[in-house]
Image (cartoon, rainbow, N blue to C red; front, side):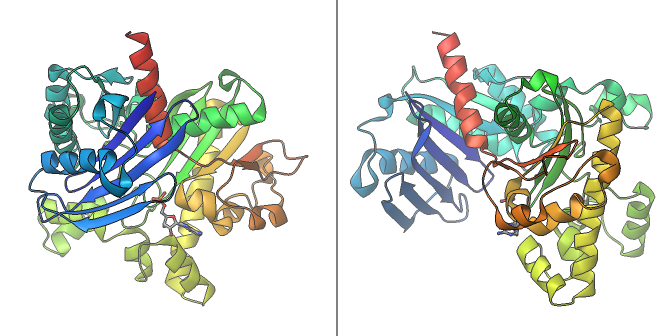
Length: 401
Ligand code: AMP
């Protein structure tokens, strides 16, 4: 069975075609610059590559190109789209309407589109892609939607409510939703497998650290709290996002710099975080390098990240009344020994002790980095959101046969 996984943004369409017999990637690529030109880069599992400038006025033309790449020329991997059993789409915001993945209907596409108010950058392009995809796949090929927010729908009200007047929750759905749910769900279940335990018996703090970062308390396989909030801006300091800031500081800066609300939003989302504090850049590698070279502000923001993660681990151990394992995933979590070592230093009170030498020598693979006498196990668990989307898609298609 072959499953196509799609991650559509406002100007891009990333895809992976997976063979679910062995869960291997047959082809992947990105149709980019939709609406502002067009460019495609594609690669097959056996290493064939294709790159070209194109004309992508809308997502429909990008999907047409995707079909052409998969079925013809040097990058051909299938004879026709009828070989694809289903398409799984990543959807950022499902709000409190969607607590699990589901097979797409026209009504569901409309609901996803209507949630654009809560996720303007993401949900409308997702709806456009769902409609465009329908035009290029056979009529009997189901589409499935997998929501970043769904995993966090198990949070109790005391975790997801803000201390704002209740009517903004009732009238405008203002609450914590959490994000990266597909990743947190995938890595926490992979970790349980690696530990030889049932995820239902584990209390895990899952640290997804990348350009965007979120920390989640996973108790018995369920998200009970998470650091991102109403939008992916909340929580720890990120590449260009501020993370949590006293709300009064925001209105104060808005006034001082004479910014409009949308300019302030841009300031918090695009100009803050590693970039804003260090002045070096948004990429952790550049910031780390600058810190190693003696740049004080780069060192400061690296220390801030580590300290904030440590505080989340402490507060989530309290929220779950226990802690069995901490896992690191995402570009930073999987690759940066410095961040992992920083987070796991001076955490003896929690029973966290890592093998420093081992931690420094490994990256990007599933491995335990805690010492045998560490009360809490610490692991690197590579994430694979596309695989989870493909697995959910396959399961739903099989269940509906
Ligand atoms: P992601 O958003 O998950 O793709 O992660 C992107 C982040 O991971 C960027 O800040 C990168 O600097 C960071 N990253 C990727 N590779 C490494 C590495 N080898 N060492 C440190 N950070 C890395």
